[in-house]
Length: 270
Image (cartoon, rainbow, N blue to C red; front, side, top):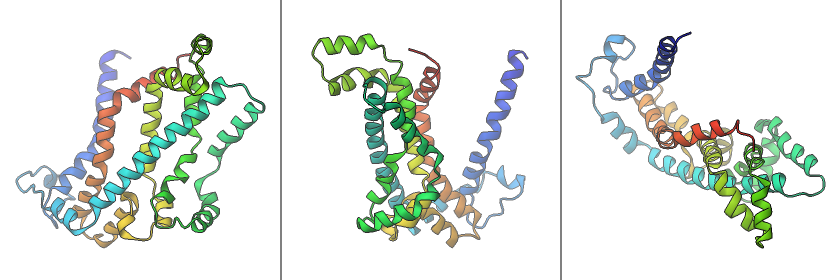
C-alpha cells in the first residue's frame, strides 16, 4: 500500500473521530429547542449563539464541579506519580528479599475490578469520616498499580553505570532517585501523569457513591444530575457535555508531544 493510500485512510479515520465533536459543538451553539436531527440544520450557521452556554453556567454548578474535578485530578496525579515512581525505583534498582513476589502481588491488582471492592472501600471511608470529602476520592485513586508497572519498565532502562557512579560519589538512595532516575524518565512520567489525570477526570461510580452534597460533586458525578433534569433538550445536553470535554481536549492538545515520546520510548531497551 503506497503512501497516498495510507494518507487517505488516515484522513478518513481522523474525520470519523472528529465528526462527533463537531456535531456536539454545532448542536450546543443552536438555540434551545431547535431541531438538530436533520443534516440541513447542522450546516445552517445563521442562528448560532452562546446563549446555551450562559444558561448552563448560570443555571447549574458546572463551574464548581469542573473546579473540584481539576483540584482532585491534579492532586491525585501528582501524588500518584510520586508514589508510583518511588515504588518503581525500589523494584527496579534496589535489591531486597521477595521483590519479585511483591511486584507480582502489586501488579495483580490490575485483575481486580473496582466494583469488587466497593463495599469494603465504602465501609473504610465511612469509618474514617471521609464521606462527602474530596479525600474520599483522592486516596483510593493513589492505589492504581499501572503507574508502578509502566515506570518500572522505563527505570529498568536507566544504565547501572549512572547509579554506580552516583553511589561512588556518595549519593544516597533518595538523591539517586531524584537526580538521575526522575530526569531520565520524565517523558514516561508525563505520559503516566496524563493517564492518571484522565482516569481521575472520568471517574464516576466511586465519586457518585461517596459525595452527597452538590457543592462537593465533581463533574463526572454532577453532570448526569444536570442531564436528567434536561433530558428533553438535546441542545442543553450537548452544551454541558461540551463544557465537560474542554479541559481534557486542552490537556491532550498541550501534552500530546509527551504522549508520543512516551509511546516511542516504550520500545527502547536500556
